[in-house]
Image 1 (cartoon, one colour):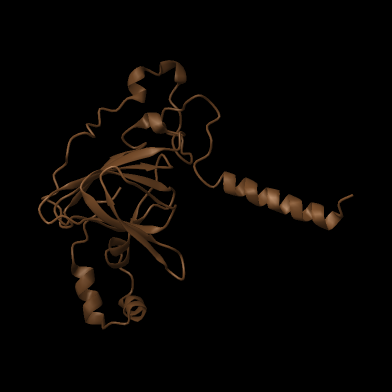
Image 2 (image 1 turned 45 degrees about the vertical axis):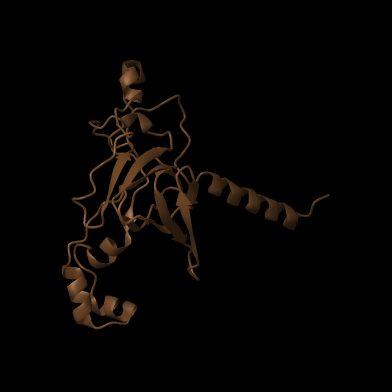
Length: 226
């Protein structure tokens, strides 16, 4: 017969497993829950539209993801097209979203985090250098990938992509395990926050002079991420 200590350990492990199972978007309790963007109710996510009023168009988005986007207007030479619950209410409670990423020659999708999602990236065209960095001690996992290759970025890891071609565009399609994965662009968050982080903090963290911090904070930090 199991001892009380072993039963307690089993219960603790089951509780931990249960917490892990619910750490992502919660499972829906009905067939679908089309987001009602006009509802006055404030919930974690979006309130549901009356399911009896649903139409096939609620489950459709004319995203034109087969078409390349312009990257010339971006300082980092990339353009991200989001398909998430904000512009596709039918995704509400389904725990999934999508993004097309276009890269100009040497274009970069700069280091960023999705705090609520794992990302599965498929290369549509071109050759990319990509990778992610773990939590401390910050090991880099990077690889060069080509058309048809697939790479996964674990949830909340800093990650990036770069088009290696000097004269050709590239493109990728990303699936994310949240209806609203969120994004924290590292450079933008550190040097472009409003109000700014104290220059004393940043100068100490980066071990540089304050003048350099002031210059970095004065730059226009473009947010092209999803």
